[in-house]
Length: 338
Ligand code: KG4
Ligand code: ZN
Image 1 (cartoon, helix red, strand yellow):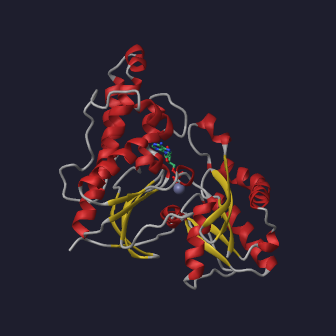
Image 2: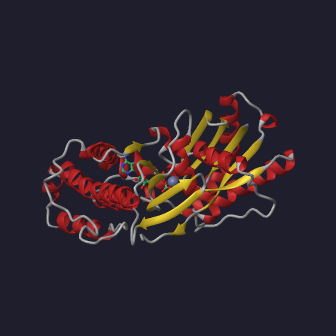
Image 3: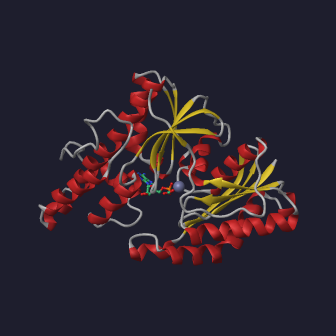
């Protein structure tokens, strides 16, 4: 089955063609218009998607050496995300699929990040846990079988990607800050400052990042400009250590509590080198199998949306002309530990 996927939930316009699980093309255009504002400006994002959607889809088809007529079904992100941005992709796919009289499916963006671990020859064994870490989400889900999600922990305030971005901003680094902090952290001393690990003393699978962000702000405010520049890498490394430790501790504990041996990570922060390293180390220690998506599928992309769409279509789901976009589209049921 050939699926064309489209992703326009935030500031990446992306289109991909997949042949079952194999990715034939995955074109991502990151909007540079937001750089000068240090964050995503929703209206500018919608307008950039509107300009880019047709050329990006054409590029994806061309790279895959396919035409629209070859496509068997269409998949599009319909939430969560920025409403104006989502509407561009949803309306476009609905129009094309209807004109071609082909099936189409609305995909939850979070489900897409989960399915970035099922692209190409990669497949996670079930039951699995998924640690979802992005700019908007930080949560642990138990997945007993395909398309069945149970939320077992989530952030009580900021998402971890958001914390990376906010800390980067206060250190004067460009948006999005995650990759810049990751790069600098490699040259810094992670024990330079002992930043607090959110909810470390609580018996919970939840996360909290607002305290860590404030601790970095307070620490930085005490330094003069020269000291701050001299210790930029050390501050990044110390922040990253605390941010990552919370993610890994909670996830490993959840795996042991629920006795789930397979753990997949998804979302933009899955690209973080510190997270990859510590997760693998702890996984080995507790004999858990850890999966990370290929780097190219960590950030927002349409291949993961097409792959999640494939899973849904193969399970008998499809959307109809009533498909809508939802900024806070939910995915999972709540589960409290027994
Ligand atoms: O999944 P994603 O592309 O978009 C959302 O759905 O939010 O995630 C974007 C987030 C941003 O906060 C970005 O700073 C973060 O992922 N990120 C990273 C790294 N690469 C991207 N955070 C830490 N380390 C990285 N290497
Ligand atoms: Zn995302």
